[in-house]
Structure formats: C-alpha cells, structure tokens
Length: 165
Image 1: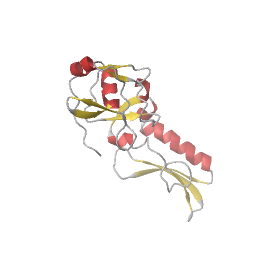
Image 2: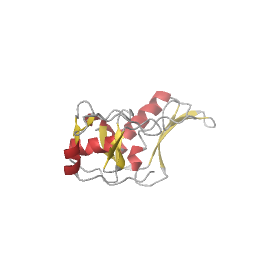
Image 3: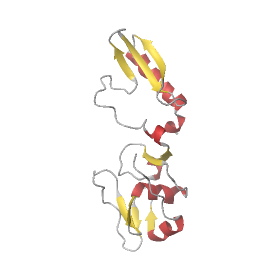
Image 4: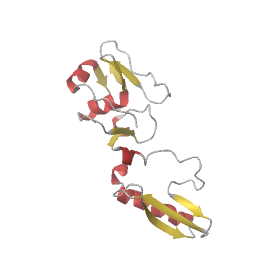
C-alpha cells in the first residue's frame, strides 16, 4: 500500500478549489481550470497544490463531506477512478477496500469466493474472516452454483455491511 500524505487544512483547500459534488468536477479557483490530468497509470485524476501532487478524489471527499480522510482510503464504488462525484466516494480501511477489486484473472467461476472443488465435485463458497486475518469462513458446499453465489452475497452483506451503504 502506498503511503498517504496528510491533506492540507480544509480552509486552504476551500480557498483554492471549488468542488461540484454532483458532477465530481474539481476546479482551480484561481486559474479556472478543471482538474483532468491523470496519474502515470492513467487511473486517478491529480492536482498540483502547495508544490505537491495530490489525488483529486481525496480532496473532493474532504471538500464534499468536511471530513478529513486521514490515512483511510477513498473508494470509488463503481471502480471508475475518474468519477469523483460525492455519491461515488466512500471512506474505507484497507481491508474493506480489498472487497471492491476486479475478479482475479485465474478465477473460473466468475464470482470471488466461489469455486468448483474438483476433488469433492461440489461448489464451495467462502469469505475472509473479518476478525482473524488470513482465515476463511466456509459458507457453502453443495451441487448448486447459484446457492454458492447466494451464500457468498449474503455473507458479504453480513460481514462487510459498509460496502452496501
């Protein structure tokens, strides 16, 4: 995980930027420019402020909610990293943030936490235990793929409710 720099004081950001929470646009108040420059990976919008480069979604969240995200991560619910509308941004810790990632390339079932057990010839479903890092909670072991997916979805809502707010 990349180190996160603390944001400048809210008062300084409010003087320099204007944020539209409905469109997600962050405008430099002095130049009139709307932030559009992407980082080197072509994902996140960046802005220059006080001789530093900042991720725009962190500033947008701070301006839109008046809550400093501190070292927590700002998640884009729809995984569109350029969509900085306030309704698309949420504050998460790193562990919870890992649930909003793309399916791994070696996943054959099409659903995270659901797989076909060749040895047992059954579908199995699991979820990471939120209380014990590295441990799994087994949710389903049976013949139905749909039931395995359903068990996984119910467990996500039970163990990680902040992802569904």
